[in-house]
Image (cartoon, rainbow, N blue to C red; front, side, top):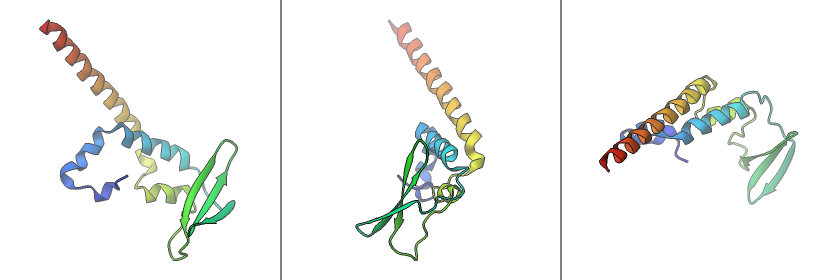
Length: 120
């Protein structure tokens, strides 16, 4: 996945037409906003990487940390969101974006159907 800050300017606007952008950010915010400590529940080393497993009642979340101690390993949900350039304040923006896209795509599909039916 391309980081939003590294996208060329001439195509950066296209991300606003993507369901995936809005949905991914909204789900990530809901998932990580109240996580205060990812912690060291289980550590496992494999091929030079350290994997942390956070086990909760209904899920297992895998978090890869670098074996290099000089690189940061994310410890809180806020750090996870910041590493992906997501902000808690965008939650309603994402929801609104998905609703607007839904309405716009359905409107254009209806107009295309209307035009196509009038041609026959």
